[in-house]
Length: 292
Image (cartoon, rainbow, N blue to C red; front, side):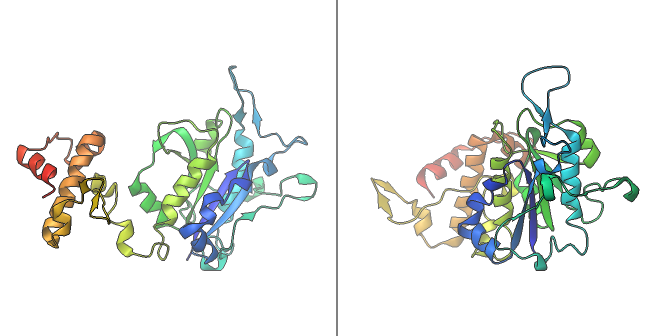
């Protein structure tokens, strides 16, 4: 089974972008994951292929229309149904697929009233639908691991002033943020989420432990890393890392991970210790300074 990613975007040419090179690119070519880029504008119903309109109540900018977005989402969900090949090894890789519009540039039939209510995310194959928005819940490494263990993901990329709010309840879409920043569109954020998922897929990273002992595991930041030369600009690699004593090395790394998390990310530290502040002891501080 391969991990199938579907991107709903106004700029499909932005994909695969950086995901077409290095580990992710090789995995795409090998069929470990697949990419389907869907042009949202193909699902517009007017001759101008309009996807947005002015905000209700007034204000600057434009808002993506719920009806157009819903049509695009319904199409993407339908691609994961049994027999379509999405989310299976048969889907293969080799680069992104672009949905072909009907003749005349109009979108093909997606969902007909006679078929009953449109499908909702998670009802058939549990394929999550994410909408990239700064209003969303910050995504975590734990959530990334959940996504990477499933059949794939559908990611909706916003533009302009964002989405018509009704789309989220109508299609059970998960609003996701990659940080307290505002981007010009959801595409860069979608690339980040996909990169985080793809690197965890079996066969992508060479070393099995590469995706285990790293930041955010157990709500801790990763310990500091060093390599040759042992002495650089008067700065030495901590002695404990050159000792060959694996037990001491493991203890030092745990200590460093805890201290770095406590100092740099107090929010993670509170979760790690159960919302109890725990300053480093004098002995711990001395051990940190000496690298032992």
